[in-house]
Length: 262
Image 1 (tube, one colour):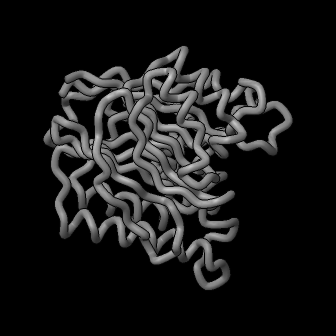
Image 2 (spheres, rainbow, N blue to C red; image 1 turned 180 degrees about the horizontal axis):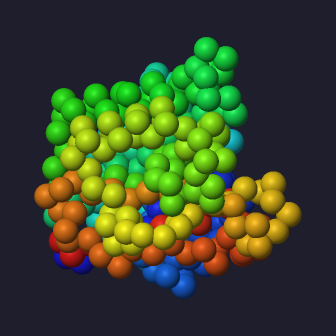
């Protein structure tokens, strides 16, 4: 059952409902995973999305903050959620397709501005969140699974506009990259995007602070698609829709795509 999956930090699904509908219409992924929905589940505009073929949804929501949703043309069932680091945040939800593939949709905390847990509580929460993800996958080994989302870490040197300049900037610090690597190793996850696009600068996020994000091009690859090793070779056709950053009233993130032949 081949299917195309996309992940996108939408930065308010209610504010950008029309952008979600546009992506569904123009790109038509079979499954669309959203993060930072900033909405209770019952307030997500499912009527419009259902009209576009997305009749299934598994989600966790909060008013004005966090929130993750999996919208699908394909039938799926709720496979639970985890409150990593006991933050009380809607940052993870899982769904299972009829072919047995489990999809984890994650929104890792950004971590604030100071990369020191003693000076910045949010940075410590981010590291604890990742540690608990690692422990989950270490003790409950995932199989036939896909993990997507805004992981808020750009791990490789070519995942950021300036490696040396960003080594002490939250999202690219060595301690964050190490924690993310431990999560990957614990679940035997493969980075599908980089398996398909192994070299070259690659970004999925550009700050709102830049006057001209396109010309400055100071991006980071914060959004990821992973798969467990038992299905990783079935993935192909990875792409990042850079042009979406230029849509009217855009999110600061853009969608990341991959297709799986399963």
